[in-house]
Image (cartoon, rainbow, N blue to C red):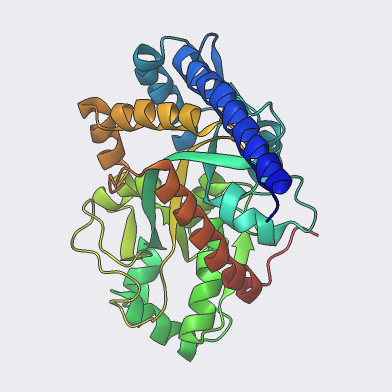
Length: 335
């Protein structure tokens, strides 16, 4: 190699080192001064639900660590897509957060043909907040009349009476709908789906006997189970819930390859500097470990497992891959 070429290479390396040295302090300074103004925390669902409740609780908790107010803003619509899209298209500076969920980041990519955002590329995962099982609950009168005491009894009834058993859900493509369709596929039964305009109307239909059973969020059904108003047959995750330790999982009841749950967590815009994401992760992780927050999560049936931003990112990718098959099996579509 000639001396001239060696000299040019040396100059190139030196310039690169100088540029890196100039940029690195800037990144560190940006993280040190962040945040210097209030943060916007988008909840892509209506007020009053579990995501909204937790977002507001956490917003108060992280204020002390971050030194700035966190303003919760409900932007509901399109199965969570409207609020998620707002966060995806915000400046990548860590000042816009969103309470994403299994729907916005794992189900909707397969449910909507023209999703306005990429659930992986357009977001920087901060941390998971809660992972909650769904529970198969049955109308008490129907269960008594037909001597259904467990999931095996329900499957036997469905096979003996094809097309006569129905289940309600919060709508096409909802977690309850997908759970029912996966049960149909895995257990080989013919059951009818009745979609309602949300989980609350579906729950009312179950209580009144308009539907026979449903897969409901554990936190929503736990009081009804405790009061004997619905009968719990199985939880949808691989492990039993600490909130219902006597209720077996779907897999323990004889249906293989069944592991579904509802989860939600904090995201910011993709491209946000890693030091800023790390600062958010530390603040929210600390908030999640506070006693009153932990108690709230336990009453929801959530298993508290804090994650780093990298761990949460890996979890989201695996959930997105898992739901591809489940949505295909269900035949659900919004188009």
